[in-house]
Amino acid sequence: MNQKKAKQRQAYDYLYYVIRAAVLLSVVFLFIPSLNPARISEMINKNLSLFTSGISYSTLTNGFGRAFKKGWVSQESFMLDCAGAIVMCVGIASGVAAACMSLGNIRLKKLGNIFSLISGVVMTAGIVMISTAYKQISASEKVDKIEPMLPKSVTIMTAFAVILIVSSVVAILLLKKQKSEKKFEMETKYTLFLMLMPFLALVAVFSYLPLWGWRYAFFDYKAGDSLSMANFVGFKWFTELLKNPATVKDIGNVMKNTLGMSGIGILTSWMPMAFAIFLCEIKNLKFRRFVQTFTTVPNFISWVLVYSIATCIFSTDGFLSSILVNLGIWSEGHNLLMNGSHTWLKMWLWGTWKGIGWSAIIYIAGISGIDQQLYEAATVDGAGRFQRMWHITVPGLIPTFCVLLLMSIANVLSNGMDQYLVFKNATNATSIRVLDLYVYELGIGQGSIPLTTVVSMLKSVISVTLLFLANGASKLIRGESIV
Image (cartoon, rainbow, N blue to C red; front, top):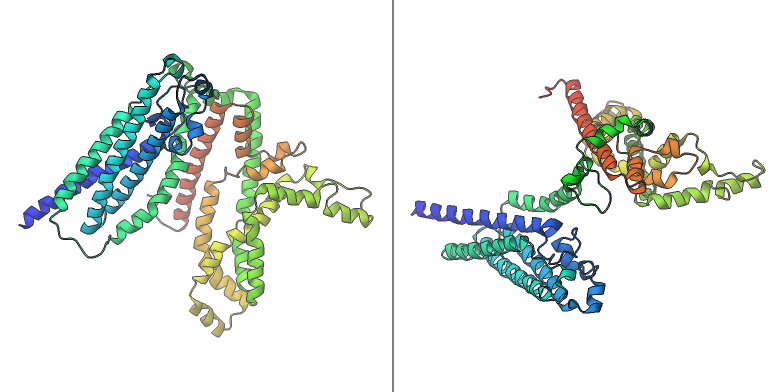
């Protein structure tokens, strides 16, 4: 009897693996443009995903204005296509919910089976709507103008829908005689995993999916072109970095600025920790909260607004110039923002003002985690306030500081772009151009997308290498094995 139950449990476990795989692949089809089943015409943008097709009718029909006016195709056909995309999105969302429920107890699995069955049926309905829309535009008298097409992904999505329907029905039958629990429950490890899933998805979409764009480094590509073997150039753009003297000179200057500003940031990376320590020593709670709030708020101000503030203070008719002129110190106002000297120091000061309060939060949290008995024992032994800070607070924050320092070293080539873009002018352009700003100007300004991609690739490789080297060095300092 126990063996029979074990076989049944193993059987519906395999079914749930199939359901989860089908749902996962459906989610992939939801966001990848080349797998969009709603692209029923060659005139529809190739970069349009199924999700965008469902939420933006105007984007789906972009370029069909003349076809609608001439009567070559009916708008109802594309409304049906858009509705089919919406229905498929809803079906996939239901499948995601079913896949999550399949990790719970018997009662939760039974509810998940219903959601999975609904998902398969709704996805099938969406596919039927898209196929109907394709047949309608195929019947147009100007087929050559509309260029109808039925993507292969329609067949694949149909297969996913059938798999979900069949698997759900079988799972419902297998669990029909299983005794259900009174409550919907799920093991803690699965609950934590599902809580982490949205953040993993965001990291995958914004950090790893863009790596697919690295392929542009191997093609002679211009905006609007398509990638093919006709414009494949191999490592041409990699060698271009070393062959072109002007490019080598620019990159040398850019790297000097990048490493210089990052070096200043690393050398002063202890300042947020010191600020947090002294802030926590303020006994007046109201004043402490005011200082913490006043220094944290600038982090949420955009660099455009920061530059506006800087203009109001340091421009020719700004606050500082007006005071100095009225006092007779200056005969006329001066625009200090147009001064190209000490650019690195100025950028560091602005960055410190904007971020020191926010950076100190993690150290404040670390201070609150230090055992208060250590301070009490030190006080009994006669230690003063600065002695307690130096011998208890600082050692307690060193591990946190080392982790953040490693992250800073790994991101030594990533200064960001916003700050330097808004503060850039004709007088400081040479000394303010960092790597991220250079990539922006090269790619967006000059349209050299392949060369920009090469620089970004090398930046990522160097950053990862520095992270491993810094981690290995820290282990050697602590006397641990690198392996």
